[in-house]
Image 1 (cartoon, rainbow, N blue to C red):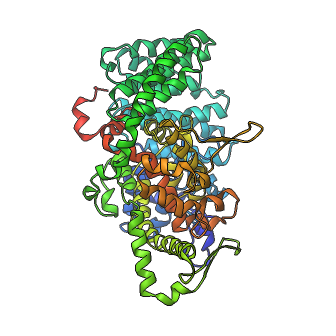
Image 2 (cartoon, one colour; image 1 turned 120 degrees about the vertical axis):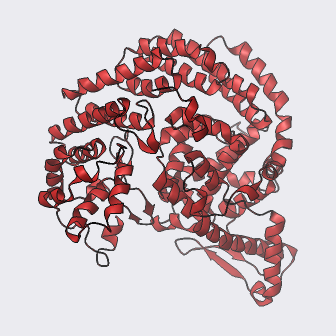
Image 3 (cartoon, one colour; image 1 turned 45 degrees about the vertical axis):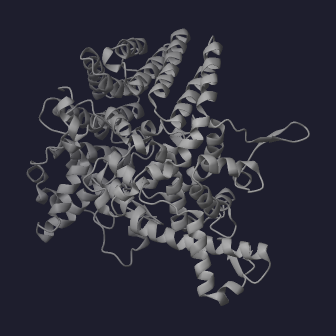
Amino acid sequence: MCAQEAESEERQPTPGIDYVITREQLDLVDVNRTLAAVTSVECRDVNRCLVALDGERPEEHLAAIRLLSGLTSYHFVPDHPTEPFKPMWTTGDRRSLVPTDLLQEQIDVIAEFAPTVAHLGLRARLCDVSWFMQRRRREMAELAIAAYCDLVEAVRAGKATFSFEKISAWGIGAKNALVRAARISHATRWELPISQRLRDLLAELVATAYHDGRDDDFWRIAEVDLDHGITPPTEVATMAEALVDGERLTDNPDARLSLWQLAARGYRRARDDENANRCMVASAECHVQKADLAGSPMLEAAFLQEAIQALRNYPNTRERREELTARLRDVQPGIRDEMGHFSTEIDLTKIVEHSVAVVRGHSWPIALLSLVLCDQPPTPEEIRHTANEHAQEFPLQGIMPMQVHDFQGRVVFRAPGMGGDDAAQEEHLRYLMAFHRGHSRQMTVAGGINPIRQTIASEHLVSNDTVLELLRNSPFIPRGHEYIFARAICHFLAGEDIEAASLLTPQLENSLRHILALNGHDTTTADADGVQTEASLSILLNADRPWRTLLEQVIPPRYIHEIDLLFNFPGGPSIRNQVAHGKVPAGGFWNHDFVYATWLIIHLAILPMARRWGDVEEIFARVTGLYRAADVDEEPDQ
């Protein structure tokens, strides 16, 4: 239920949702004149212009302006088959607007009004929403596809821009428009005449990028081409191979990897398994090159393991796998020394205070890094000192036993108080440590994590594909799990904490096992029948088992201790148990401990890459075409 419905008795009526804005009211706004100076074709920039008008226009204009503001405020997910327009923010059981909130009568008015709009981005949005809500309106589907093609061509001709003044018809803005047009064409079985124009445009963009030797632009748009079978797949594969051998990419294994994988996809679509396998073996060697350039034992081990796992799927690679496995064993001892001091190698004093100022005006990678580094758990000694001080200051509270209840009201833990034997006192002290960490997390979430992620969501375009590429170099994430982390991060930035916590909580213990495996430690046990079982989180963190000590040798103890208090200890939030057994009600996922827990897993996934964040920015630029200011002069003319 959206915020407007949840508070219907307290809020002002919302245009388009509680009452219909007429065509005459929309005409009063004169959007063609109003938006004439907006050169960007993206709705996020239209929305900013409309929001700025809210306090400037006469009262009779405001309802129509607010309707158009709502229509341009959606979070655009162009390739989603059922929810291309998601809420921009979600908080608890509240969210911002989505198309399904609109009255059907309002859709009729929007469909009538849309063809008269000159601004291509707004026209595309109005036509798309009209068709999305009323699929019988095939003319709206055709107009939407045409508008998406028009806006890409307008940018290419220099008549318009995308957000951030991007003038490339091969960047992320163009890709999003083309992906959405292709999705509509797919839903209408590519039967609309305008869909042929889309096919021609995609094929032309792919061919131009190839002939000009622009590997990033080629890769970005060729993916859309392959997804929808525009250019013959063997041709795409051949072009990708030709580009990957270019001299410019000799020292760029990430770009080479993307092109080899694209070539393999093309050959696989053409049912040419021999060439597809050859390309995938070549892509595995890109991981080896990344290991050569890593400059970090942990990253080198992660990349070598990626290469070994990739080669296992293909014939005649055994000798190469054995060679890489031997190298991996030689690298593993260096991981312990690196990670044991990792948390002190990042100068957190250079990260500004947890506030919107950290993020506003910065690039997406810098904003993400600011979110990741906005906090660091204290050491176990610091937490214990705080708990002891509390026990001494309030001795009567320390004597009294305490109970901890789960979301269903059941008693799940009893703290015995400080008056018993040593074991009882230690258990009560552990409870106090968890209790005080809860208060600290609450301040961190309210003062840092939430403001930063909300600002990122409002200022930056975030997509699964972009985040996925950034996470491929994280040694914390096992191979094949990057997409899960990417989706969870996108959900987290949007405030969709049910989805984020549900996706990431089960990944934590698997990632800890993965870290141990990188160091050559097996985490499986076998019973009398030889049935193997992997160590669960509670076993990994059990002080009586060997794995906790091994983890603390690789990951700073502050993190292992925080994971124990947050996810495992029954006297704390016990998040792993609460989520795994379905005990958390919807509102519970926005509890500060759950938000912090999700943030902590993201923190651990991205932290190992922080020291080489320039590489992450390069990957972001390659994936999106949004280059850093320092790179503008180096961008190819497009």
